Image (tube, rainbow, N blue to C red):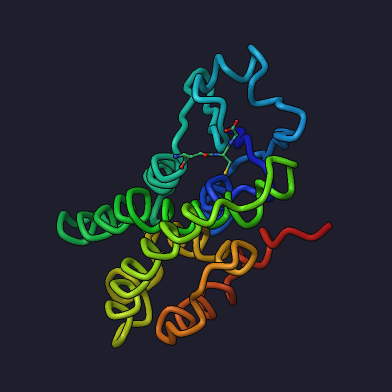
Length: 206
Ligand SMILES: N[C@@H](CCC(=O)N[C@@H](CS)C(=O)NCC(=O)O)C(=O)O
């Protein structure tokens, strides 16, 4: 299998972390987003949304990072990070959807305004958007922080796809200047994820 990614993409990172943690047989393929390789016809044939990550498994192309995580886990015998019982799986799925719908857009807004826009010459952060991002972040970080008050991991007793997905997003909080230092439970949980090999191996080093 091939996993098309970019090392600075939080969305690609969660799929890469899942692949590494599962020991899935994937070769990483670098897509140069700065050079718009994701908009070339060959790439668009795999993903018309011009985005990484994309997983290639023979003639099957799968996009959407969390769908890729689920697919890789389902293909891995005796994996432990995507429960197979109905409730356990539903709980992980709940957090994966929440991550996609709420948590990532909150941090993603600040990431775009405070980091990416200035970096690629698209102008200064828009204060209205920054405020909107901070309001969203406050709402959702409060939910996750309270959830983690007496838990080590987001779902169940051990690491799951939910942790990898949420941590990939949370990892952008610093560079995105997202105000998250006051969320102690969230910070402690993040420290646990950062100790994982899959996290360490996907830290971007120039
Ligand atoms: N919902 C998608 C989002 C993917 C996404 O936005 N990827 C960004 C990088 S973080 C990208 O490839 N952007 C390139 C572009 O928009 O042209 C997922 O979770 O996979």
